[in-house]
Image 1 (cartoon, rainbow, N blue to C red):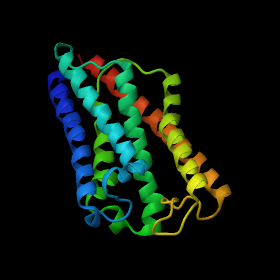
Image 2 (image 1 turned 90 degrees about the horizontal axis):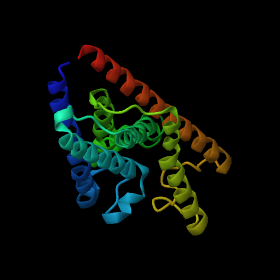
Image 3 (image 1 turned 60 degrees about the vertical axis):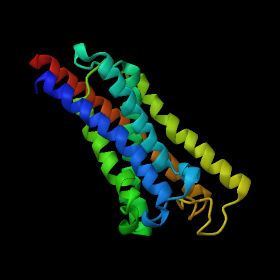
Length: 222
């Protein structure tokens, strides 16, 4: 792919993601009855990892857009820090996507998981974020930076468990275990947490490999 064409396509792709995230969030906030499960009014919606991971991806795409415009004469070459943040957002979204497909969908029904804003947060934006990775160009990412993948899920786990310990699990539909991770006890919940950590780290490693492979191919075509 010609670098100019790739640059223009990547720029438009990242702009689309950066715009889609706040638009989808506004849909969730102002139309909570049209979005199925795991949607709330106002800032309460930010308690969901789905919303947080989408915002992480949106911020990563927005920063990439700014960096690409600044370095337009270099075909939008990105610094490793921005690439890391961008891939971290995509890895978090892959975790959201896979969790819905393999766990929440069968548990609560796919119709509710892919309704309204949930369709964007659970399906469209995650897929778009992942498909945009091969278009990115920039500095290399070291294997050590894969460890950053632990940060979002670890921080969310601390928040999630602390909220339950402080306020109790509660009773549905107002349960503080809104993802149902403790439906089978704390033991199973801990196992699920380790599985989620493994998935997000594996996703980041795979996206890092894809990013480097596409960068090397682009360099050989120049």
